[in-house]
Length: 571
Image (cartoon, rainbow, N blue to C red; front, side, top):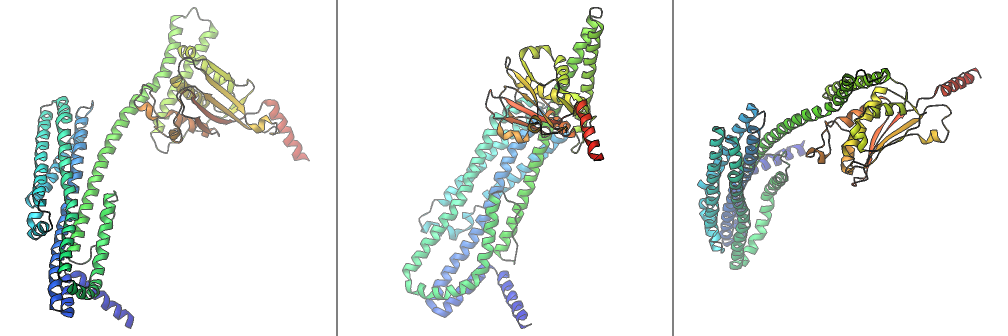
């Protein structure tokens, strides 16, 4: 009980110290040291306390100005990016009025905030408000700091006004509907003036940072002078000040260290940390200001992120529509080609050929309908592939049918090497297998240079080759090898994800939805197989896309397996 009472009293004393302003705490400490040491020590301590008090106020003001100027730096950069987004939306084929209005409001808000910060700084020159600091700087040999600050502040204000005039001209062009001229003015005038304003602002920020070092050097020089003047007095005072300083400075150091850690974390982009505000002194005021600044930065960052996400989604939507249109063209061309032949040569084609063409056209229609259905299903994050209709399929027959209906021009441009045994059967959905092979072959034709071969290969698993299966089905490995540019190794792990395309294809002539490989992998896995890609990324070595399917036993093997099972049950 006694220990709890002592702890409570100690906590109240600590809280009382925190509530006392820093200047008063330091003054009390130095006063105690002066009374204990001597009158001379008291005079020295009083002078030193006054210097430190002024320095503390100066650092507090300087920190607030640095915070505001850093915030202004962020606003100026956001102004440039938001202006780009607004003009990009205005010249787009289908501009969104809501997005345009949002960007305009954001621009107006950012300009207002930046103008407020810059005006406040220029109207309250930091050094002009601290004549003691000016005298200290002049005494220490730094008389040009005040003039330099005025010059840099004037430069920041002048470049800001020029930037405002350039933006006003762009807004007039936008209001007149001259969007192309607005874009040109933005590139030729707004961007350079924005860079000038940003450079001037950063020069001012750098000046403030250097001013801290300069002020510290001036204070240090003053302190050295005092020590040289009265070394004996300082020595006596040091013992007393040391004892009092430990008692007084511990809470200050702890809180200032927390302030330092939070501000350093904020400069590294970790704006989620906040300072615990304790007491009502100057450090508490600075901590509150820093927390407010961090909240503002977090809000601005969230707004910028939302703008970027909205712009990215709009781009993905337009690209996806274009890619889907391109992908639908292949089966439509195939269907139209066979129907055109049937219409143009009704008498010349025999019954078997007509039936074959009709079958190919129907297969193309089925593939087209399935592609549309799969694209609609793929828009759902958790979409599931329909259960496959599994049956015994001849892999060689499926490949031959698919290639027989392929575009003759592509077939002539690329020799096809097939290494698929006629007797090889898979337990799979024929339609699903055709879709997977169609996608892989379509990619191979797209990326393989004319005249280079495309290899289709199918083999049994190593256990089956060694004759170890004992009439039980194994796995069949199917691969499509091309001699194209290959796939960068860093992009291989992302290749089978939804809407993912190679970076080089985003600006190239090769189109795609980014769904082909994703859907193919889903189909293969639905049939009990696996799918992967192999590539070194070296030009000319190409890529190899592989997938596995369960083997389907021939009828004689099924009968042998059934008899072996029955015999084992009888024994």
